[in-house]
Image (tube, rainbow, N blue to C red):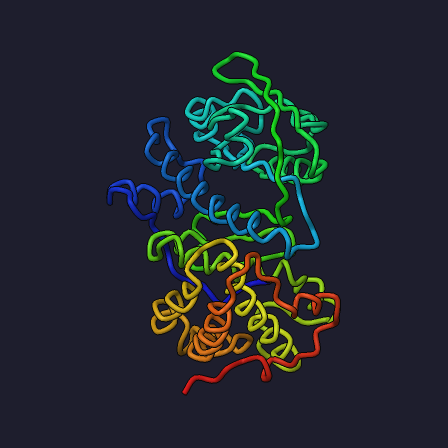
Length: 352
C-alpha cells in the first residue's frame, strides 16, 4: 500500500540546523559518500530510526489484541553493516562498533531488550535459534537485516530468548522475555520525503514527516499505514487484481483503493486511542498536511479529498472518545476476512 504523501524533503526535529543540513546532504547522495568524521550525521540518523521504531513499538504492543499476526516483541531496533558501502562502511563500523554484521542500533526504553540489559551498539551473535552469521545478505544491501528481523519475529512469542552478543570486544549473554506485538516492521526511509507505505509486513515512513510533525501526529501517519497491514489490504487488493502506480486512480481501481484508505483512517483512530496517543491526532495532522500537500495536482484520485478524511476522522474520534475500556476492539475487524467490495461511500463522512 502506498499513501498519497509524497514529493517533499525532510529534516529532523530537535537537531541543530548544521546537522540537519548534513542529513539533507546524506539524503541527496549515496550513503557511500559519508566521511569518517560524520559522527553527528550517524547519530542523527540513529535518533530518527529509533524515534520511528519507538512509535511503531507503542502501537504494535498496545494493539496486539487487534492483530491476528503476532510476533515475539523484543524492543530492539537493529541495523546492519551491510547497508553501508564505500567510504561509509569503515566509518560506520568504527562509529557503531560493529563486531558482527547485525547490531543493536537502539533500544526501546522499558522494552524487553532494555530490561534484559542490551544497549545500543551491542553486536548480535545469536538470538534464540537465529545464527546471525548464517543469514543471507551482501554489502550495500539490507537483506541480512530483513532476514534477521523476520527470523527473530518468528521465534516463540511466550518463551524466553537467549541472546549472545559482543559489547566493546567482550562476549555478553542475556535473556529477553518477549512480549506479544503485532507482526509488522517499522522503518524510516531516508530521502523518502513525505512518502508512506505498507506492504503487509512492514510500515515505511519518509523522513519528511520527522521535521514538520510532533510525535502524536507522526504516530497518526504510522497508525494509518499500520492499519493497512492489520486489515490485510495488500492481500485483498491483489485478490481484486488492482493496478498500482499511475493506474490506481483509474477505472475500478479507484473504489477499492478509496475503500482501503477510508478503512485505514477509521482504524487508525482506534490504534491511537489504545496506545494512549491523542485520539484527534490524525485530525491535527490532516489540517496541517492537507491544505499544502494533499490538494490540487498533488491529490491522487485513488484517495478521498483531505477535508472528507478530516470529517470522517472527526466522526470516528467522537465515537471513540465515548469508550473507556482499552483496548477497544472495533467490530469491523472481522471484515479483514472478506473480499473488498469497493464500498467507500457508505463509510466516508462528507465535509460540510
